[in-house]
Image (cartoon, rainbow, N blue to C red; front, side, top):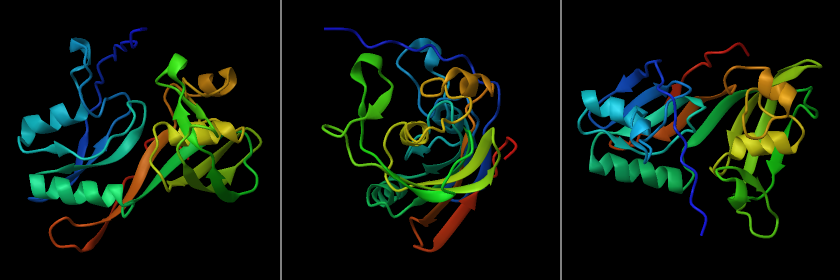
Length: 222
């Protein structure tokens, strides 16, 4: 049986930012190039949650962003908050928005990408469109700005599959700039980082139940 590939992630020297804190949760901005959780290899121990726990010993990871993706993440500060926030994610009660800069002029200017995703096992961690074995995946998109060379999209994933936004954008012929897995060479070389950023989260506070929104503008030009 083939062995899974180990990925050695170079240290990320950018710092995370705490955008909000109370006794139940933190809203944090993760920089691109930082893992959400530690990897198995000793060289991959640096991660957002590891850094957060140096300051907040009670911090618990609720969800993840890809290492290459920057932006908003929620961190629970106790087990009750972790359970309630996790339930909101599982029930799709938390809405998410991302900014992405993609290759080419996207048309139509808005729509939904509805294509099932599955792991591409021979090339993991890559995912691919798979109508036979894939899991349902939907992404709403709205074009905020476009030119012949690139477009800025506001992406609202309905589901939360691995690499969903990257694969869905590539599947309609507009890969995200800087994407090492799914972009063609010109789009891959167009940016030193993946131009994908988690920019908004809407949820209910795990203790009070009050509707709350967190926003974090992308660190790249859109």
